[in-house]
Length: 327
Image (tube, helix red, strand yellow):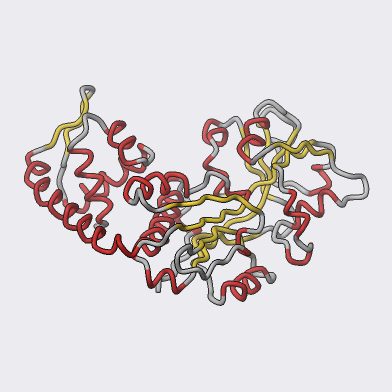
């Protein structure tokens, strides 16, 4: 059982509802409910009564609560021991296509737990290039790698291999009411008659084509007949606009794109590319020296990994996980 699950249990016991507890923990309500169900299955008994008025502890839950509370307090006490060893700041660079994915909720928790620590969240197409060996301001990079060279190149830049999180691939998001929605897969040629909604990724063009992961954008824009595009400020705005633009599309990375409400509601569809290799792995790069020196960096790395695994579990994509141990 993860200690995080015990923390969830304690906060639930101190809350009037699962929704209130989820807001206090900065987690999605389905994730909290699933964690509680797993804890009950592991212990072999019910911990809460659930009704319209809210939640109340069962007799078993009441017996467990004082011990769970003590364990969480001990753990938080252990976390406070190295606080004088906190770095001045941590920079977290995230690939543009992963805007709003995994990191924001983690940052809310860390800013509450470590108020004196500055956490900088930066979006860029070149996340992997922002390496810092400054012990007072280490860097992490959440980015995408493929096996055609970028993984080796990025690993050489960081002087170590990354922590791979899960497998995925590039494809398109389309409006379910548009003419593309009926396709099971799609070619680049079929996209040329439609409008590409593109976030402002001007730094992409600074990357030599042979070193770029997202070659599909190059291939689309360099087609002889050209591509119709509309540039918006960020990925989330492109996806929002797609709900209104029936004959448009957004190039996206799956399964991370499942974070968008439009996919769950059915307003949008994800379509993979046909006859075009667009596979990639989501990877987390971090400096080994900072990881070993600062408990908060280790906690941050582990939290990002846990959040990625929880995301896969929520969307039924556990088979995409990459099981590699932390060192």
